[in-house]
Amino acid sequence: MPRADEPTLYTLSPNGPLVRLYQQPDLPCRTRVGDFDIDAGPDETPDERVARIAAACRTCRACPAIELCEAGFAELPPRFQQGVWAGQARGVSARTTRAIAQLEDAS
Ligand code: SF4
Image (cartoon, rainbow, N blue to C red; front, side, top):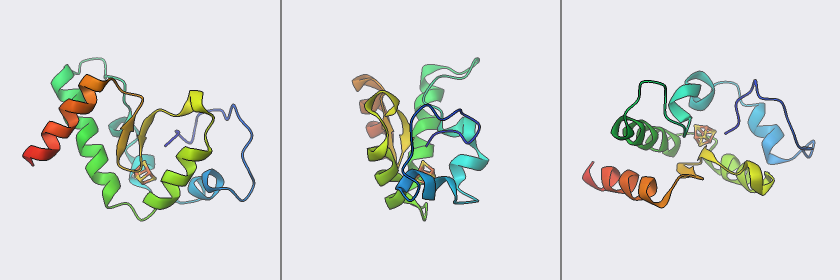
C-alpha cells in the first residue's frame, strides 16, 4: 500500500477503501515499510529482493485488512498501481513474479 508519508497525488473518495485503509492503525506494511517496497534496497541482491517481497506477500495473507487493501488498490489511478498490495507484488517484471511464485511453491 502507499506509504503514509507519501504526498497524495490523486483525489480520494472520503468513504472509499483507500481512506478506510489509511485509518487502520497497525498494519504490517505501516510498521515495516521497507519490507513492502518493490524496489531493491541499496545493498540488496536480486535474490534478497525477491525473498523479501515474497515474505511481504506472505505477511499480507494474514493481514486483517487484505480485502480492503484489494479494494484500495482498485481505487488507485493505474499509474500508481504498483507495490505489494493484498498479498501480490504489483508492477514487478514477469521474471520477478515467477521468482516469487517459485519461492512460494517451495515453502
Ligand atoms: S494486505 Fe498487505 S499491503 Fe495490504 S494493508 Fe495488509 S499488510 Fe498492507
